[in-house]
Image 1 (cartoon, rainbow, N blue to C red):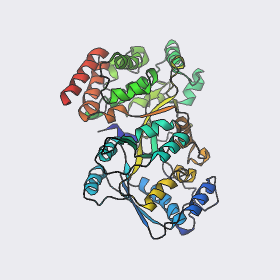
Image 2 (cartoon, rainbow, N blue to C red):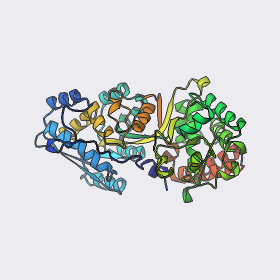
Image 3 (tube, rainbow, N blue to C red):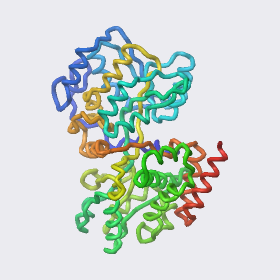
Length: 451
């Protein structure tokens, strides 16, 4: 089971404070904190009456319903007929449809890999340099989003194909505010402060971290997230990119050092609930529970935004539990990298109205309507953050807006035999006592065997 499954778990349900507007619009035009000026300006400049826009992707209920609410505003603004079809077999079906010449106008890709394959096969229409420049200027860590949506076309020319719309964040540390307050601990603002806090908790007789790698057949994947986050905090993004493609081998000293950075947290008995030997055998879903015991069995848990689904029943995020950004090293001057994932839209069947819909997604309004419904995060720097459905989502959005670099989960971009195979098992071996260099050598050999 891939990590992306867990990343798609909704944190919070759709709220009840929405007002059904006329014409099947979710919010009454002109009301609320939405950027109606951007919507009205778009509507005044676009008329697609009689044209259709078809969109296909992996979103099912409730996400598909949220997106349908967005499409209603596009239809009202332009007169177009826009429909979305979701499927749990989208990634297989889109290839079949595109090769048969019956693709929808737009495809929503949950991972960039397939988008790259289809771009190289001539099955996608480039979005153009102008949109790439707009993305660089208007998305936090904008160049990262352009890079993630850029692939070689059929002739081998690098072009911008994918516009990201809805992302998730993994670079988080969860904690219980009451525990911190009782112990007099402050939220750390740098990796140096985080390590100092870790030592302080031990000195005070506590255990700083709850870490579990267990996940059935997928055991080991939580450790790969740690390594990816730490690599982004110890090396420049180009090192990360080359590592994901194996242009830098897995046993490169910089990668080995990132594994050992994880070990600095996970392989010290006094740092982890149950000692280092319990890390690999503790189920990741159970591992944060110790934060909620009295006295706390542990104080911090590094995990993505989905993890509240496994907190004790009744836990209220923002009060009973909260999060902070997994911080960067102050002395390395590498900015604030964020690890995560996201969905991107690409044109699989071009038309004027299709190009118009992509243009619509540039408006702050299009993002704000999704933000208000929940389960949606955006790096768009022009939105009104107060339109997020909850303070929790707003806090996650703030982390995105503060990012200087964004990168996709590295193991998800690697060949399955490595990213969902030897990388996972190698990290289990590492927490069990194997050296980082031996583990990295073994993973590299497996990658070479796949080639």
